[in-house]
Image (cartoon, rainbow, N blue to C red; front, side, top):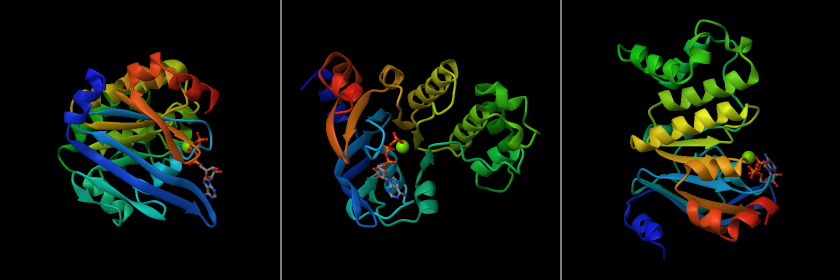
Amino acid sequence: MSVQDAERKNAPVLLDVKGLEVAYGKAQVIHGVDFQVRKGEFVALLGRNGAGKSTTLHALSGLIPKKAGVVRFKDRDISRLEPREIVREGIVNVLEGHRVFTGLTVEDNLLLGTYAKKSSGDGSKLDRIYALFPEIGERRHQLASRLSGGQQQILAVGQGIIANPHLLILDEPSGGLAPIVVDRILKVAKELCDSGIAILLVEQLVREALKFSDYCYLVETGRIGGEGTAQEVRSGELIKRIYLGG
Ligand SMILES: Nc1ncnc2c1ncn2[C@@H]1O[C@H](COP(=O)(O)OP(=O)(O)OP(=O)(O)O)[C@@H](O)[C@H]1O
Ligand SMILES: [Mg+2]
């Protein structure tokens, strides 16, 4: 065990997924996935298209049923909670592909992320998001339908951040974005992580993911095919399997 691994084992577990199995009808696509996110950690799930990353995220967020397995968050079994209850526990999942309400303004989309009535603190929360992502700040009063696909994606990430999660899940935030914007989103995620919010990232841009994450799991056809610290993955055999798709 490396020093980094030993340090990791000492950090309290925030999210604990054990024996997760998921099927779409008769087709089982997740076959017993185990992984953890520890307090203050930035974890990446990597793997080829169709490996089961999004399915895993959907299942732990309560958006699709689990065939088997237990999900614990902050030492509580959340396996049977409704999606909104899971959000209330502090897990916010920014889904793959931008899903914002195009008929609402940018600002109203963000306020939806606070899922509460307008409160006096919302102004500063909004300002924080606009400071992080000026491109949506400039368009705060425009309908989201007038944003580009990339800007909508940024708005979706802003919606996730403004919800004040304890664990922020980002499923391929890079989709359709210029590399420089991806870098900025992941930098923001890293800053959130440094301020105590754990991050669970799925990303096809392996190099970017490894640059910002502490620990990685390789998902291969519905199973965890390997794991290690970002440094171990970068310098070991696993990186080849990640690139070659297992
Ligand atoms: N709604 C669905 N109904 C049936 N099968 C599905 C459904 N969603 C995904 N699948 C299948 O489940 C498997 C895992 O898909 P999933 O979307 O979890 O992969 P992924 O790792 O997120 O891939 P990508 O990197 O392309 O986003 C794939 O074989 C896919 O075809
Ligand atoms: Mg996916």
